[in-house]
Length: 476
Ligand code: ZN
Image 1 (cartoon, protein in one colour):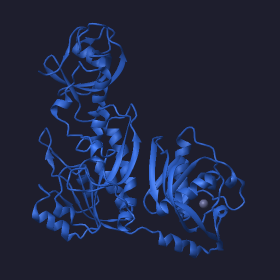
Image 2 (cartoon, rainbow, N blue to C red):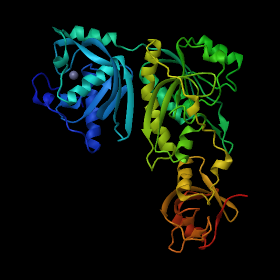
Image 3 (cartoon, protein in one colour):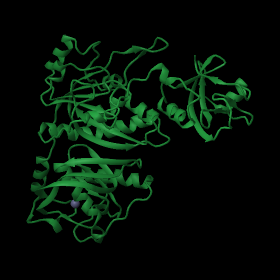
């Protein structure tokens, strides 16, 4: 629901807004309402005090995607530039204001996750303008000159900032790649074609369509699934599409130089890690497996060497103890999607800067192997818990019970193990399922015997009747 915009001498515009302590439903509702209010007023940003709520919340849409930031803080800034600004709370006026050219801002998103945003140009200006509102500062306080502005002038400023619409060849395969495609479509870009890996037969012979194919087909986009992207017919099809950009997200095949040369402005890749860390096919799973508490998304200019291109944008995300590969992948996809439109505008406007990766800091995140799925109970409880999270929802961490495969789906660390107890030993005297590890005990909350449904540890104890002293084994 659009809200009334407080104007001119309204006292709330001059107060120092309070930090948000608790991101609850009313805060998320306020974010929704602020967006609607901003859109209806044709603004590029809005701060909560402008709708009468003295809280540190801003929304900004400077033509390169929507940003919602709770408790925003300026971490660093560089350069100065002067340009004309207006304000929805001071209708009828415009003025020249000096602002930093590039800023790094941090804050929380609506899920309470910490976000970092590197912005330049118009987006950086909008962020600074909105953050000033939170301190009771209005642009007129900083303007070097002020002039009366009609609605038309203000709109002219907005038109000048309108983003260009591009023709894009989009390449991506799994769920992670859906969000960025959705974002490009919502910005009005022309998706000339969508390229995914060929559909594969699943374990029961059923054809599994890549998530991106399902999404694209439902929207009547042209979908290609070449066996090899080096195929000359495919490269010609990509050339014939005359793309401005090739946008790649978790596609799953190396791209040739011929293909990378097809777009007018270049090829970019959305990669779910803080490159140069975790180059490769399984960055999300590997970061969880390693027990990391933070990771991020990088948008890079694509180079021939896998994941080695210059960094165009990067944002950090926290990994919470409850995250698994599914939830973290979703979080990173949303973050990458939000960063993408701005990068494309900057590349086309030649204001993008690609920072080379430091090869000395590079680490690898190779595709998961069957070996990675096996639980080695002699490892510490914390490491096994990370492995279980990293392999959820798929493919699942595995062990053997009585020679049969079992997927361990969820575990919890409960405490130290008694001296001398053998790793893999089951303890179930109290009706719950616990397992001795190399260091500590893990309680199994959810597991799935081969061909059976998902069950709790207690259900397993009742149904499979293990005795204390029985063991989960690793395959030889
Ligand atoms: Zn304003």
